[in-house]
Length: 184
Image (tube, rainbow, N blue to C red; front, side, top):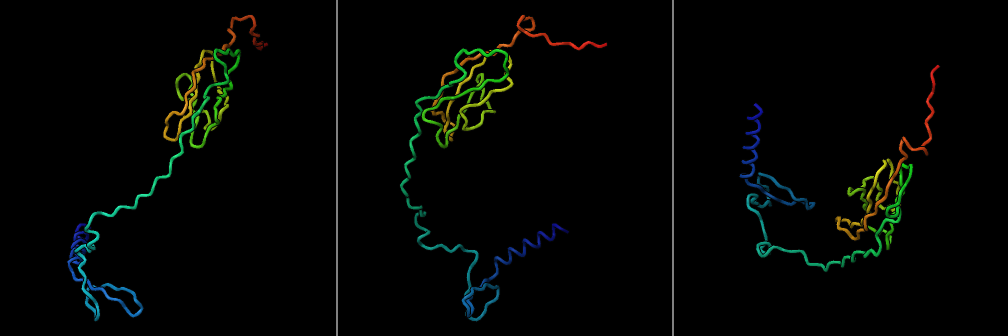
């Protein structure tokens, strides 16, 4: 039943396209359309596209406006890790504050990317030049920074810095013993 309704609707639409269409303007200037002729109405053909002769000529193109000169990318003269220093050793810590030096400062549309052990450090907030790296375990780390534009093109890349975190060994005499509660 539903298919029959769809088919009848389509046939009605096709027959409406094939029917005559009339257009007229009333006393207030409003344009009306109908499938029946009215005194003063003109017959229009809705199946033929009406194009002016100027449209048949070459396609119109928008006038070319001169492009505004895009500002030249900023040339960074300094892009390096200030802290930690190269081969700096941190004892008994799990967090290290890192600082990136940029000259000039971070420009609009650019973003700072920091890499820890070769992978982007996603927790580093955009636009911040000093941040604390947390949850670091004992070992050696490599950190570097670069500035990229909105397209991801590197504007400057700093050298890699190595730093080390040391934790006292369980066997170290400097390690304080942890008191063990005695049951009684």
